Picture 1 (tube, rainbow, N blue to C red):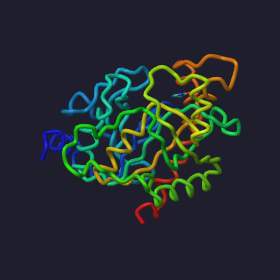
Picture 2: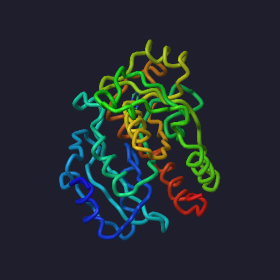
Picture 3: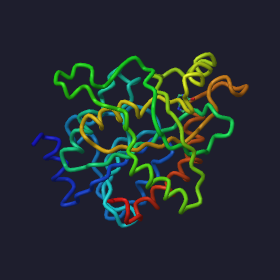
Length: 268
Ligand code: HPA
């Protein structure tokens, strides 16, 4: 058992969540809905990231959501912070080590579709890694050749769709394209992304999906749209806009997760 697994197990005080939820921009408020909650600062867990991005705290909140055990990761490390695509690897390894078998990822994203405006929620059905990097660079075993044909789990996707329907929440579906950031895309890059088949662009999630599949976790991911992508409106993009607009879609996505965790069929 690694130090992180031992420490996390001890701090969970008998809780045994099977599902972890990574809270991106706009979803942070969900931690306040966790019942029987224990809060564990990343700083107490060896290898967990020290996230420096405004709007991202760094702690685990574990307890129950809609009566089902959950472990929330409030705060993540991004590739653009230090140029390390594997920054979340120790944290995800620790989660796998305590028995987490499903990972739900969320993020803020720019939309490439006029019919998917700010405030929309998009379930990611597939991704394009346009960063030029990979969190498994340096991995020496043949396990590094991870298949991504079914990266986004069919069963979890079906559960998200059921939850959206049950709550009357419109759920878009699409392809998420990972740009390294931290600068936003150019209008030319967005036109390219559209030709390549992307529906949304963002600066996170894809490395975590690759790492999670490497670790054998089942994965699903959803974006909250904070803006139309570069060049689609007159204005310039900003991180402030991302932070201001994320709660809009975040509220919708929170409703979906509440219903999803109440769904007895989630374990099927
Ligand atoms: N581009 C990249 N990342 C983002 C965007 C965007 O337009 N909006 C929110 N995160």
